[in-house]
Length: 132
Image (cartoon, rainbow, N blue to C red; front, side):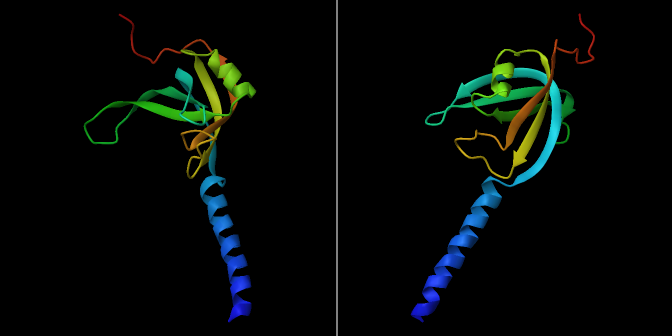
């Protein structure tokens, strides 16, 4: 019985490490989102991370009959070119490449979406509604 405890512990550690990697480091999806950068701020209690919100054209409705703006909340890595560019791009139209993880990690950010690259920054685009 004692000779099975050692290998069982090794197998358990390997399985738990695999589950941890899958939940927190497996890239579930990658893509590009575009819209007007609403805000980009550094916040957090222990781990200060860059968090932002992109407002996209159009509307989405999680509930039938209700309207809300189409928002994309994301995190960005500290100290790289992404945070430096977005810090100066508030209110502008931006196109962002991101990775989606299954769960956030406090030191990576508060969102499952982590922006890895800024593809375009330009003046804010009109949402298609006439100005009055």
